[in-house]
Length: 463
Picture 1 (cartoon, rainbow, N blue to C red):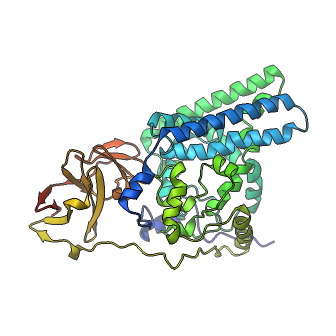
Picture 2: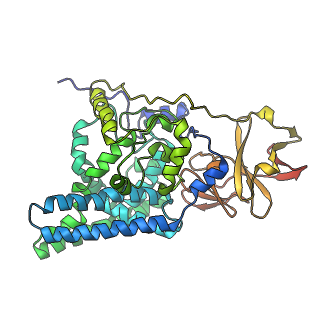
Picture 3: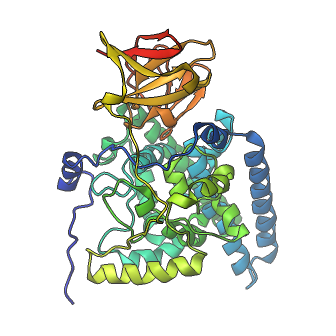
């Protein structure tokens, strides 16, 4: 049988990484469906109660099914019971890990952090490497040589996908990484996206994981029972089936190296149970466009962008009728991919040009006072440069660079909280009054610019 060699090098240290930077695909400006700012602010608002409610239901279901697993052990009935337990324990943890990693599920940061760490352990993912990996995934979604979570390469690993039903290949890889990190190591690839200051946390957390694994194994030996392993370690394998079922719909067989999430993501309507386990991540085009929107607001966001995005898939059946043949075809022809069709109502980004601004002695007319509500931010462009203009709760106006210093994302799409602007991509925070960083992953301060108001117009000195 002829071996097909991939057309591209998918490693983060290969020539495709450099090529992506040369082509302007690295940390690039992505298309976003225009949504009125006031509506966007509503959609980005976080609340504790929806996530608390869903977390209580989730843990109650794990406990109830876990008790049923104990009651039915060992019998044929224990097989379906533990498949359900595993899906609750591991597959549901995947989406909780994801949303709490973004910091959007709960309004309270500590709640997001607690569930993120718990879900990371439950789904066999180390919290620190995966946090930074996923930030890169959102910065460079399906960009070859840049995206560390580009799982469906060309030609696809069909055998590995089948093994993914029980997370055999991926789970073993994660366990190897955990023990590798526990030994005090961080790989060269990981160093390309994990800051050096985070490396000690990688090692510390891996050692905590290993300690729990050893304690679980010791408990199983002491009890002379397989049950401790069925409850703690093995769900990450036998419970991954629903995670694969939902996860493959996200990006499999879609376009690479495009700066439009409408072309490299899918939105798939799902049944209520899968939606609960998946925490509405089936609205994946919407999530990638606007990752600051909490999962419980994604259905509403979906309605806002529906006119501008490809037709959603009616369910798993329709999605997999496309995905499976496409992956099979890619195994023969790695250049093939599924092309998503935009609706006639879709439109391109509209940006201001430098000629639209009045300039006098370095002062640029950026906006009218009435165009910036108090406690909000807007974007304005001057030539090739982009800026963020803020109206603080103190009534004053402020201006900074328009792009986040971490992921080069437009801050105008972020959330203003007091004198803090939160990046819409990775949730890093700056004090827009002085440009100082306030929350990782951002490390570099923003540049600020003088602002003045004359005749109900806001001017920024950028010269």
